[in-house]
Length: 77
Image (cartoon, rainbow, N blue to C red; front, side, top):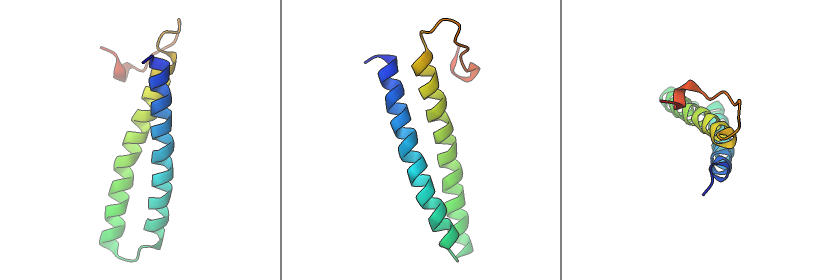
């Protein structure tokens, strides 16, 4: 597997996460129980972090071998 193919996998995962998060936001908006709303908010917060990582890793793996590409310091040694 090439890194550019891996990038496509991260993009697909990010797309699925965005769709799931949209559903959770609708569920949270309709929820009347404060504890359940808080639980949904926490879940959305966790998924947002994962989405950020998917986007960053997609970008990194897509351009990894390009000259002059400035890599995210978070993913370098």
